[in-house]
Image (cartoon, rainbow, N blue to C red; front, side):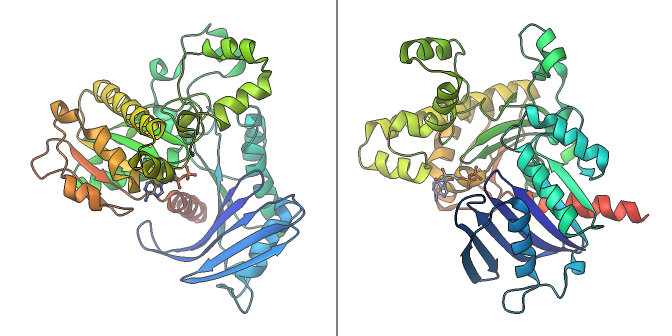
Length: 404
Ligand code: ADP
């Protein structure tokens, strides 16, 4: 089954075309990125194997962007398909599934209406995701579409993990609760880590650390999420590239009062000016932080220390929540590539049974690797995440079930 995977943001969209023979037998046929949708000149980068093709053109909206991708996919020069009818299904990443979507869903009128209702909880993301669904409907009528939600994997959390200690009426009236994000990644790496570490997923305690520009950590018991560090929005949890993560909430009105900030300024401070960038004043990018710290920049070192310490604290609390831990997983751009971050997180966790092979850790970049020693009680591994594959798998399985 050929599946087109779409991840639509407000001004960009990423795509992959996968030939899915089964969950684990698949070929990536093409992938790419459309940027600057809605600006004067947009850009499309399309990759097939080692070949890369880039073009600039006006891309006023998502429908035009998706049309440009579809044209490329069947073009003589850069295409990988004979005709668009070769695409059997389209899978979309959708940011927020609220409490309604506990798993991936076939797109129909109800699915669309429910995603629309959830725009209030993800005003930057869900509207863009919906635009993608509607553009495909227009351009490829009759092709089945599936939506895969960043929040769905976390829907198994118990109420005491997702209810905030606020007046209960705000949960009832406004759906204010912990939702969690990066669900497809946590689902993928926890399953893969269990295989990799020789654990039975249904009888395991796994902590997954997805560390990228946005980061979240999840406690996975017997294959199901029981807690996660992102909350009502992707703002909670550990410090990120430019996001603060968890802070004392009363700091917000205090700084707003001092600086004369309105809600938009507060939002900007917490989302765009905090985290690694805010602490270091150097960059939001972990590579730049590592380089600056190595060159003696004290605030870059501080940013590194705060990041590792925050992750370690959550790992420790999730070991308590799980009643132990069999495996700790690192994934995402930082988790897969930053040996110093992994080293500093694990340093001091020996009491839990964590023992790292530092040489293996130092040499590990973006490849599935066991970085703990053979006698480490807790397995620690790096697993390369693949959210697109989760979307393609769910899409294939839901569409195959339709035919039965
Ligand atoms: P996103 O959350 O946008 O998907 P990624 O998962 O791609 O982000 O992660 C981006 C982060 O990964 C950046 O902070 C980047 O510096 C970091 N990163 C990528 N490669 C390396 C590396 N070799 N060493 C340290 N950090 C890295």
